[in-house]
Image (cartoon, rainbow, N blue to C red; front, side, top):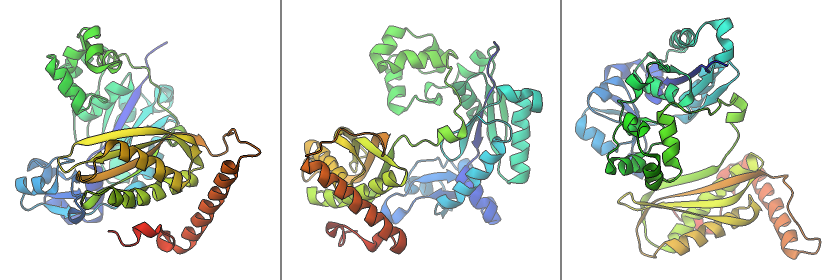
Length: 396
């Protein structure tokens, strides 16, 4: 059985490119799509080529970007508009294969192994997609073509913008192994730093490293990363509809000012849990684990989670679990810059629970479910602010 043929298609500077389509004048100035500076969510989300040439990078703060590029034009994000283009682009991908797995709003993997008799080789299909999206939609993509998902993504990152890179079993050592270790997906900043401390700076060094040392450094992820560096990845490309299955539901916020009191945190957690619980109910899921992440003004983050007693989509239960996590891990008076609440380990809302015929608690929970659904109907008709918890009414 021959190798699979996997493409990874990455829209170049996606948010910024969409804004330039709607406002062509942005092409002639250094421009970036960024969060709201006034609410301290002011980081660079995407930048055009002129801003990139000035040294502006994604995920840095606005003040850092303006220091490099004083004339930088900032545009607020329009996520609804980006989602429309995401659907258009993935619709084109699905004309060549049913196996299209989005990875965020601007990237997708395609398994075109079975499409080659109809549309040509993997590189041929990549070139066709690149040209079609440029001519029909007005955006550019970079495409990596390889025999697995890991190397296909490395290929799309290798040459930008508007390019195709082919990584084969014959050439991957020459192309991939010289790249820095954090160029490979799943190797984040902390893992890369840990690897650097043991002398591993490139993907090639990772590929040839002692597996026991890697295990001691990164746990079970160490040997797995070594396999990836050697081209040993057989993870499938999921069909488009499977890739949209909900794995977790979370909401977070960067606060207008640092919070320092437990009650202030509770007010914020209440708002976040309202959003999370509503989204869980909307997608017909309940969670069995709640995670809370707190970030301080120095950007240090703690992340803790706790299992629920029963699968839940009830706001009050999420609030209480989140606050139990915070109480156990937060010292009153410590400054907090941002909070995220995430529901994990989801199960369908019709999954069977072990209920007691005589349990007053179970009866109460069913009534709480009915109340939550009534709140959803009211908010759908009159807006989200039609009903709010009293402790959030006078907060910013």
